[in-house]
Every structure is written in C-alpha cells, then in structure tokens.
Length: 235
Image 1 (cartoon, rainbow, N blue to C red):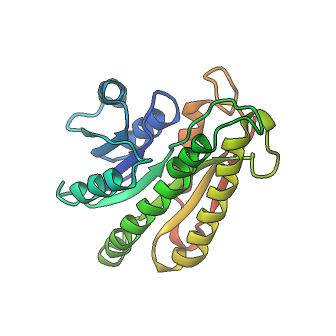
Image 2 (cartoon, one colour; image 1 turned 30 degrees about the horizontal axis):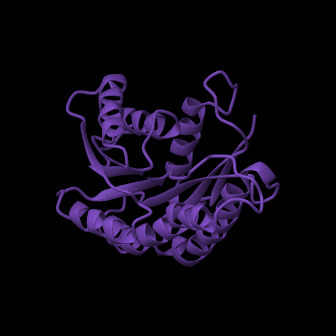
Image 3 (cartoon, one colour; image 1 turned 45 degrees about the vertical axis):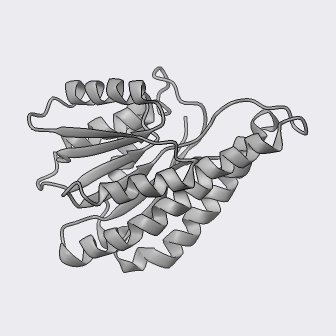
C-alpha cells in the first residue's frame, strides 16, 4: 500500500473488467474516494458494490454519476458538478469505448460518429476540464501525482477490419494522448496510455483485468522525473 493518502480517482467508462479492477487496485493503494462515470445506472450500482466489497478498506467512498459521455453537453454538466464534491481529483482513468463488430462500407456513418464522440471528443472535453485542475493540484502538493491515464490498444498499428470503427477511434485517440503528453507532462500532469495488446479475459496470463490494473498503478506511481507516456501490456 502507498504510504500516503491520495486524492480522488475518477474512472470514466466504469465496468466489471478493467475499470473495476483499476478502482480496487487504486483503493488498496490509498485512494479513499472514487468516482465512477458510465451511462448505465444499474451497472454503476453493481460496480460500486463490487468495489467496496473487494477493496476491503473501511471508510472508502464510491460515488457514481450516470452520464452518456457521447453527449457533450451532458458530459460538461457532469464535470461541472464534480467541482462541488469537495475532493481534489488526483487521477482520471479514461476507459470508455464501444467494442462491437461492423461491416466495412456498410456501417452507418452515424455509428462511426458516435464512436468518435465517445472515445475522442469525450476525452478532449475531459482533458479541457481536468488539466487545469490537475495542474493546480500538482502546484499545491509536491506529493501529488496528477494523472490522466487512457486505455488504448494496438489497433493503431494493426487495424482489424471487423472492428474498423474501433480501430479508427483508437488510432485518433493515441494521437490525441501523445499530443497532450508532449504539451502538458512538463507542467506537472502525467498524461499516458495504458496500451492493452489484445482481448482481455480473466484466464489470460497478462491480458487479464487484475494484471492490467496493476500495470496502470505502476504507471501512475512512477517518480515524476521518470514519467513514461505509455505502458504496453502483451500476452
């Protein structure tokens, strides 16, 4: 466990796989306040219960916020609301994406646009809101490790035609995160990718949610003078 108390962890794209395991791992390392954002309210409550149960830490607080992050107006409103929670956000873990097969040249344009809204426009809006807050925290606390971590994949290098929309948005997302890292990592904000190199399953040796969460923690916990902008996890 980390030897200090951390600020708030915000997970965008909560779910029973990587999202929940990141929350549990960070909670065991000293994060007492976690905020989950997702569009499905019932799943949010299930995630909250699972995290509290498995983190096994007295006093942990898990808040949930139901929001469709592909709706820019709703997302901005939700982020504004978070400014009133009374806790400084130290780490944002962006884990939102739609994973579904589609037929190349037959997929509706509207579906592709929706994927870009979820994976790229939403991340851009989050960055616009979060980076000034993370910079302020970094300036006020030497110990704070202000971070924006984003899950990605190897689809930017090897697109899968059956997942061409996901391949498109993940390539664009990688470019966005690289640009943010080049611009803001020197200002006290650790912006980095958690690159997951394949399908995730509990039975996998490396590409399982628990190990991925552990690698995300190691990335977050890097010393400031040794910040990397990516950790790549392969099976």
